Image 1 (cartoon, rainbow, N blue to C red):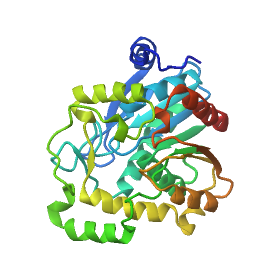
Image 2 (image 1 turned 180 degrees about the vertical axis):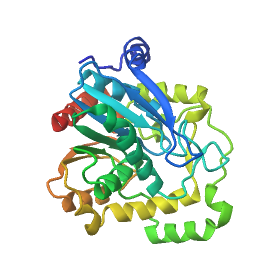
Image 3 (image 1 turned 90 degrees about the horizontal axis):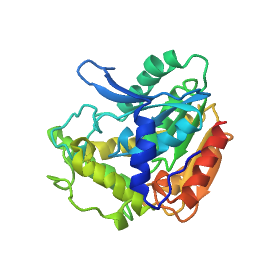
Image 4 (image 1 turned 60 degrees about the vertical axis):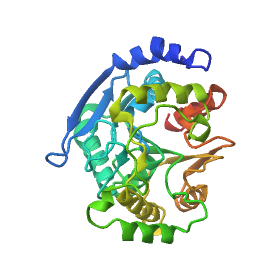
Length: 318
């Protein structure tokens, strides 16, 4: 395994990871619903032992996972990933390119299921198919393995969005405010106006614990308009609150029948660790791994944390 380290990080990515991943990539779109194209990427491993499907987080894209895909491929996993609707190169249901909007959270789930059933599994033969999720993608993933318990063989939920953090504001208040403000077309608007993408990064207030990784991806975002989503619509907030409540309920968690690994960031201020703890307590046999002192994006940490993180993931999947 070649690991990308902090010294000359961007140069290593350009020299090793990007060419390795790019030469194994094929990309395309599918339409689960006519007129709603969803972008996906497929990365072919040399001699795959299993397949991993990536479900990314809020305001992200499969393009953010280049380093992660690099490690997955080296470890012998074929990789698929999609840009969730409203993100990246997938279609948008609103006009503001900086705002993520979704009509129904369940559409994220049904898009992921369609990709897996119609694209991934027909080309995977008898190989096991695993799910790797981050943040919002973890809520999508939890909903998926609850509603489609035989679709995947194992699932990794990394810093999953199973409860949103709004500071001291109670969730019912947030939901009520979103319901009142999100009437008609206003549901597609953000709570605060967003009209441009910032030209300077803000690592200190980001979700990352590795500055070189943050800087590398922020530079990509500056030159790629598809990667510049940054705020939720009113309806995204409303739908996400409901989704988090659903996927952590006793009724839904009882439906999970596959091995699950939940990885928690000890210093997470974006999602609620208490909701993750509740999920773990309700999912039979759920394996739990806590990374102390780290911020939300665990796949964007320095090597001393990142390498054990991936070793844990690959050990669980093997």
